[in-house]
Every structure is written in C-alpha cells, then in structure tokens.
Length: 245
Image 1 (cartoon, rainbow, N blue to C red):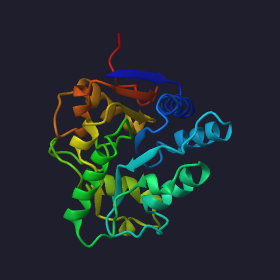
Image 2: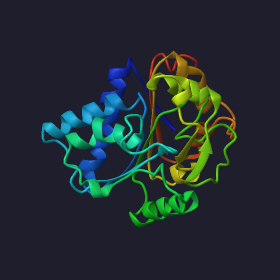
Image 3: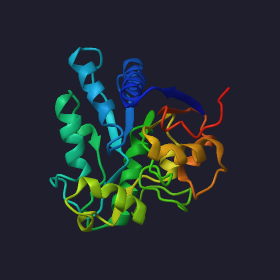
Image 4: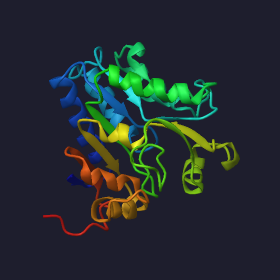
C-alpha cells in the first residue's frame, strides 16, 4: 500500500487527477471505476480542466461506477447518474455508451447485479478503481461486516452512512435505505486502486485501514492485500497515522 500525504483537499484532488490522467495517456482505452460523493468532486474538476487543455482524451475510455441508490430514478438530482453527468460526463468527450452505472430502478436486482459483473469482465476488467472512504470504513457502499468475496449486490445502508449522506438531501427521511454496489471482490480485482480521503472525520477510518487488522468490520482494510493500492490523503485525514517510513 502506497501512501501519499498532501497538505489539503485541493492538493489531493490535483494529485489524483494527475494519476488518472497518466493512466489514460498511457492507455487511451482505459477502463475506469469511478466513485461519487463529495470527495472526488475536486478530482473530477481537475480532470475536466486537463481535458479542456487538450492533455487527456476520453473518447476511448470506458467507465463503471461503484454504486447507485436503490429505487432512485436516474433523473433524480440525488442519483449518481445525475451526479456523474453534471460533474464530469457532460464536460468531457466520453462516449456515453461507454459509461456504466447500476440501474437503481431495476425490477430484477439479481439480474442487474449479474449483468453488471459481466459487463466489467467483458470490458477487460478495471484498470483503475477510484475510491472514497466512509467514516465507518466503507468503500463503495460495502458497509462493515460485508463479505470480502462479494460481487455487485443490493445492500442496506448503515445508520451512520444514512446520516452522513443526509446532507445531500432535504431531510434524512429522503435518503434511500438501500443501494446497489460493486462488491469487495470487484474492487480488489482492479489492476490499480486509488483511494482518496480528506478531513479529520476520516482520520479514524484511515488509521484502521492502514494500521488495523484486515477485517470485514473495516471494509477498506482489505486494501492492505492489494498489490497496487495508493492512498492520497490530506494531513487531517492522516493525523492518526503512525510515522511512515
């Protein structure tokens, strides 16, 4: 596990964007796993600027998003379909046919999850998976005590996650209680992983991820086993880490 500590959120976003840009430059038809939430917003803004400057071309890139709220239509302003379109896709030259996000309003959950797994395989697997981390150590919507061998599945959201995500909704009652998410196995099969964390509220989760036991109680701790995982964290998120040699 490679750990990069930077000064602040802006520096984290710039560093992450550079790593993703290098991936696309070296392999124009890269398959990227993308995350949502507040953490990657700065990274997406940086990628948009790099695209505008002609440094990166998304025309051959394929993307797979980590998750989507269950029973939330794609045009809902809190859906991750809406998030991706309004924070990245509409500003770059990606072919929307090559973007993939779980269907949160599917009538057949099992079929949707199996199909999503197969699409990733057919695309050749993920070259790079971008991750955030929840205060409880979740990655994607894989909450504590998730099975590490899980693939794409429907999950109930922890009360902590619902509370954290309520800031994006008018009130807590509107936050979906379930989501479709890639599983730990999907994430760990990515050839490289890039996890971002910023702020003091992520310090405990980062400390457990880096120094704690590998346990389903802290889903992100499994990244200790990945051969090419990089954590980019600001000083506040890194504040509980032991001295790194």
